[in-house]
Amino acid sequence: MTTKLSFVDLQIRSFRNINELSLTELGRINVISGNNGHGKTSALEAIYFVSTSRSFRAEKLRDLVAEGSEHCHVRAHISEGGYVREQQAALGPRSRKLQIDGAKTTKIAEFATKTPVVVFHPGDLLLASGPASLRRTLLDRVALFIEPPSAAHRRAYQKAVRERQRVLEERGVRASELFAYEELMAKHGSALSRARARAAERLSEALSRAFCRMAAPNLKLRVEYEPGGTEDPELFLKTLAERRVSDQQRRGAGFGPQKDELALSIDGRSARRHASQGQQRILALAIKTAELHCVREARGTHPVLLLDDVSSELDPTRIGAVYDFLRDTPGQVFVTTTRPNLFQTPGIDSSLRRDFRLDCGALVDAD
Ligand SMILES: Nc1ncnc2c1ncn2[C@@H]1O[C@H](COP(=O)(O)OP(=O)(O)OP(=O)(O)O)[C@@H](O)[C@H]1O
Ligand SMILES: [Mg+2]
Figure 1 (spheres, helix red, strand yellow):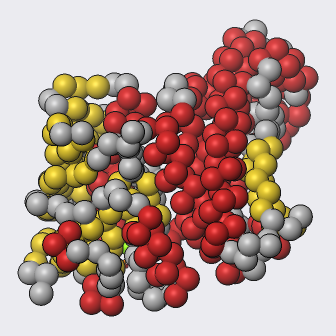
Figure 2 (cartoon, protein in one colour):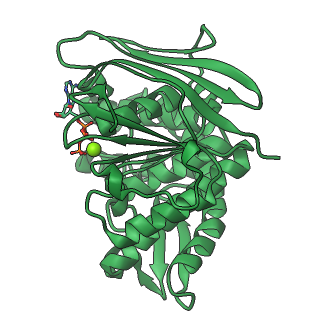
């Protein structure tokens, strides 16, 4: 059974260019409009932050805090299956604070799976053609829902990789503490590879279906997880020991899930190198559709969909796909646009749509 999930209201404070913003009586389709640079993406980012404790665009979370402020804070009421809960996420100079119904939590995976969101923003158009790290993030987003401990494995693995590399470079390949870090890398890295392999399997089915529907049906899409490490902890450990010298020389670990790739090919040719612009776009949209599907299946609820910058270029492929999204998902949607009048929502009862207009990060009359 799929339950209903939706944001009821949202308060944002000292977040990027938003000083204080309160969005109440949210609807099923929420259109956030405003001119360039007035805070639309920031508002979506705040929704993402209070749902996941992360950002979909900031390299450093500190960038979320408004210049001149020490803290940023987002609070939301979320209704699910007839109950309303409160979620809060705040960021200070040295700490991140997460709360559910007033109780602090340090269990990030538990917090981040509570209110599932799927975001589609302009950077996602590079999903098929851009760096492999984008596709690893995608795998991790899906793995989080099908195997929540994978998030802790990833963090522990990344920490161990950094520590081992520091020791290799400062103390050399015979340093006694290397083995302990390599054991940690083998334990958490093999678990992460397992989780990503499972995520890739789920994504692959949904993605092939979505791509087939959106592109020409005779085009064959292949989705394959190419592990940079191994699921076998013993083999992992052995390989690390063999690679100490080369990892020291190249100043980075050459074996492990940080080298994973989710390889996509269309009719036998690598999508990354050979797909046309249009195919890359359709592939990006199909990937997002597949993510939505996998998260819904794993979590048993329709994720909230965040669509950034849907019509600024009025690209017919994107706009058409956005309408497809709106028709396909009965879940709540937030979209941002510079031109709300051109963003029509045919077939959707107008009482379900709410319009918000931002000017310098503050709400102004939508008309
Ligand atoms: N930490 C910060 N403190 C203050 N202002 C910030 C911070 N980070 C970003 N900004 C500013 O916030 C403004 C809003 O950015 P945002 O990306 O939300 O705009 P937008 O409405 O989505 O614009 P566009 O239509 O161009 O995508 C920008 O002018 C940006 O320079
Ligand atoms: Mg924007």
